[in-house]
Length: 195
Image (cartoon, helix red, strand yellow):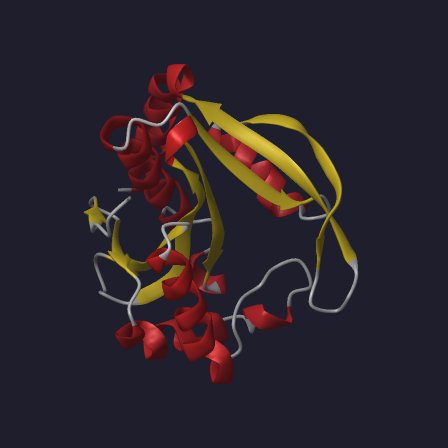
């Protein structure tokens, strides 16, 4: 089973999610009122603790490994991400449930976080494949995944039922172990430009 781990570089620190992060996550989500975005599942301030409890329950059965994203220079919690749909037998996992405070979107935070998560997945966990799924209408997320170097594989139609009852088509992206060195190099260059 994958164990909680802290990952860090010059830009961000990814810490295993705990109940103690509730206040920081609530403040990060309030930056842009992210819970009101139709294409994402960010907790409202009054539901942060249930969001954490659900993530920790999934971690307890080995299906997820949730993190908070903390900015190194300020120490502020600026979002959350996780490994999910972990299938050790087939050496694959998904990186997802990622959200960032509005003021940190489009900055060094996302590429720095992905560099850590992908590096740990491919070099320590020795996975063959990392997957990403996003809403077919989330153009910002799709563009970020392509910029990351992930390959779009297809669309899963009516893949999820959203909280409002609508059906979500999910776009599947992936990075394979053989592709990781080129993706790592691109991410490292992006970090150098920001630091």
